[in-house]
Length: 146
Image (cartoon, rainbow, N blue to C red; front, side, top):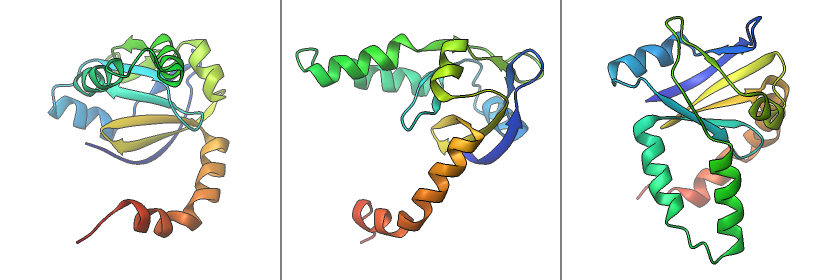
């Protein structure tokens, strides 16, 4: 559903403008509401409402008797905020989430199929630089093409 890399800046009021491609896809799929929360690798995850509900069901089934599950759920769900883009496709991200991801002005908005990731531009560049060399090795270990 969401694909590509899009370079953006926060607007003067600190809002993020969702790329027009993502707005079009959202409209085609009747997505009106998103959920943003702390993601992995120090970025933000932004899920369409239906995908959020799938993730919520999956994660709430983790055993609360396991400390790692409790820790993950606390950080993931306590950071979550519901958002509806305005008519220009802008969303306001709470300061605590911007702080978590190190977002100040320059950002990268990344489409990762079922979710959108919002990155500090420099952190994305560093992640990409250090990860691109191992792309084929990762694919070989994770994907069985037969």
